[in-house]
Image (cartoon, rainbow, N blue to C red):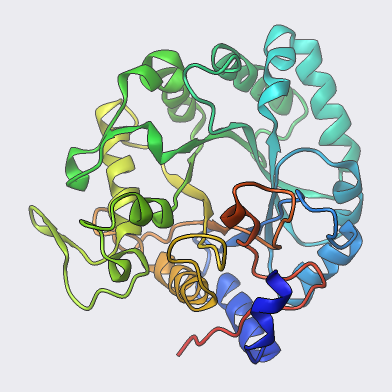
Length: 345
């Protein structure tokens, strides 16, 4: 299906190259250059060495993967790609129960790959309060942090977890942002204390696409795609022209209310699907991703001038995901061809 979508477009490798050059330039020493998530739920994807070559070809210097796949880690050896490595939710109980288990995990998946540039470890992804993993999340984070520190890597690798914006109880206006009590009680208050104590960021998966399709009456497509020509939401002295900023600042407000005012946000996923659902098209996907990588360089109204490290979702279309629109978030087809040209002017 993704192949047919590309047939009517003129894929410009030059334009795509400019996109990924944009991902890594003009960010100075802020550490805010962006990356791309490498999901692997497809049966037709390139081999990991080919994927690493593709990242290098397009100057993508940061990658997120969703578990310590040994083939991917081997392919990353000696590269300059910085890695955000997830620990899957179903591993948290084992790591929470024993410091020795955490130490072995770090040995097997970090220390054994000394020439891989690990940047972050995300202990869990979008853990919900009712999940069996919820009570193990913070103990697992603590054990992994101790193992990382004991390995002499505490200044190099930051430990955190990724949340969904469904953890917000209020998000409108952004200054009223707050977390749901069930998230705070299950683990989020303890996570925030951990992040403050370790000077680590909070990973947040930010999808304006889902905000738009869940409420198209009140949220315009232009507001979701960074295309609004003027302020849409006034919040005291701050004005919001796009939903992305409003979501990120709502999370910042929620962090402040929970004692995490010093915690920075890393946007660990953001993107737009090109097919399979409401408002999905190659044009919308191109527009969102183009505008995203430009926009995050400038911060948000609440924290202007502070670039937001962001991971675009995703590198490839993944044909084993459901529902249908989940298959079409890729910047590339599985044959490594870019899906669309991107106008960055």
